[in-house]
Amino acid sequence: MKIFISTDKTLLDVDLIHRYVSTISYWGRGRTKEEVLGTIENSFCFGMYNEGNEQIGFARLVTDYVTFGYLMDVIVFEEYQGKGYGKDLIEFILGHDAVKKLKTIALKTKNAHGLYKKFDFIKIGDSDLWMANDKVKLQMDN
Image 1: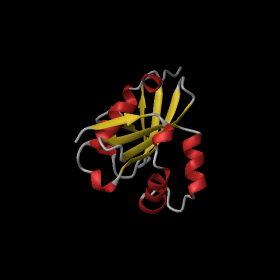
Image 2: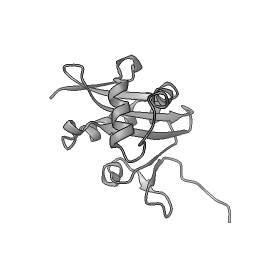
Image 3: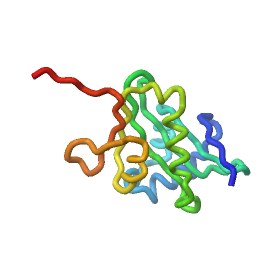
């Protein structure tokens, strides 16, 4: 199946995103449609679509567009999972001009550590959830 990814928020199927986040995801249960609209409005969003323009995936990044980004609500809708689209979506996001210059990208995941490790995300501290792709090696004085 041929897919395309866009940052055009007008293409997003907000009802579909809301339904997934509020009823299926483990991280956003109970989120209202107004809250979902607010997160979309205040984030850099990525929609993934099939050749019929049906949305099959979504992700958003909260960022200052200079040093830091927080990757959130990464979704491949159920009927499209297990086909490599999550990898395609992350690859597109990290390769986007506005994202690839960021020094650090952080995220939380309960069950997709293997996917993110492929993109140089590593576990942060003792957390079972937090991961980061940090391009800056912190140097501390002794």
